[in-house]
Image (cartoon, rainbow, N blue to C red):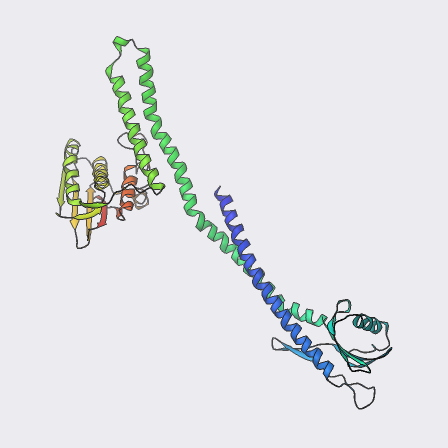
Length: 410
């Protein structure tokens, strides 16, 4: 899928770039063609107006006629003819042994048959200009093949530049396709991993529910142990919790804003969360210490902020070292409220620290742990994003810390 997307991206880019370069190239081509044609016509008028006779004799002068193209002088072959009735005389030019030839007769026949005084004879690649002087007609001819040669010589480097540009842009397009599809590829991999992990997490409670249900069906009514039914209820509640967490993340992915922002006290929210988790920490044998600055008023959703603080405390209690002290600190600065939740334990390597907020990710890669699904920190990150705040993780030999920073209400 990603490969096809990249190929489609490159194809679209190259089509657009080729179209633009083709328009530029053709514009330059036709501009130069018109310029050379204009110069050629100027030569044609000059040849027609100049008197090429030397005195009264038939000996004609052969001056060289040239045009300036790109700083270079280009000679244009030409010749002039006077037509007296049925007689034609070559009166000047750079062509030798043209008079009284079949080629001259064919050229004149084609020229005189055309209604326009100025035009071209494509079969002989000549441009002509007729002047009627009453008793005779004077016709000037200029070779057009030289125009095409000059045009090809001038456009050759441009064509080479065009092809080189297309090759370079092809390489750039390939690189850009990798860069542009990287978020899509990442999202695709995350989606596949999400489905795999969600299926894995749902498999265990479903197995427990089905097993206990089968045992209940097989056992006599009077001999059915109560804990089998309790197991079904426990795993069903666990599945409901997982589905609710997945629904929260799905809403965030769909950009559905669920936070209702009002003025709330982050100090009170933090204090309430600490009071709720003190018994949990005590039972886990991990004392909970806290220091909360008062009057930290923020603009946020009280329920979601309470959920965020609870996720951080729950995570610290679960993964903190045995007997270690869990610390919560809410610091109020001039513009920000900074909430830090720290727990002692083994430092988390940097390559794993950056993945803590990924869905279903656990640093020990364990899938047998039943205390959580690995979605809590992802939900906390989502809540932080909804409040335009930041949530980051730090870890060293002393402790692992989650730092939540948001703006105070002005």
